[in-house]
Length: 171
Image (cartoon, rainbow, N blue to C red):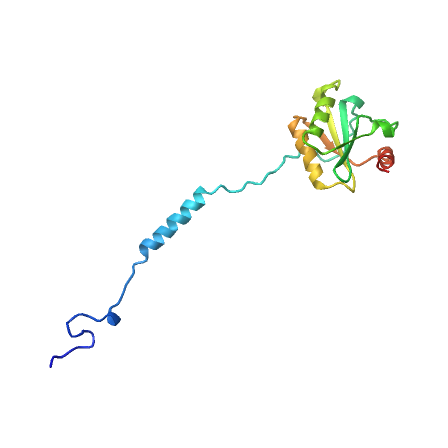
């Protein structure tokens, strides 16, 4: 009888249970790092959409803007926008016009007022949001100002005479 060692079978070959399998993972790791590098370099990173908002310097500067050289937008609720071109306390409810945020509607109003302004270089848009207005409308009106290339604009609170006319208008 022949001596069979535990690692060999009768025909002299190693049995399947005793064969050791070794897999070299180095190429797989290299491929993984190459794929990660490719996707990082090929991905478009999301850039935040930021609007440049120029704020005035510290201190209070009082500038008088002529009636026809400005347009004032009062942002109301439900996408309502009221606008006028009056600086005086004699604003009546028929002088406060109403519109809505629709495609290029505000842009047309700004462009028309700017075209009819006595001095278009110092034409100013004044935005006056109310407590009922929403932030989206504020951003939309800033977009419309950017579309019309109006460089002078400001944010202000409602004056008492505007508030009275606005309250009459929404009733």
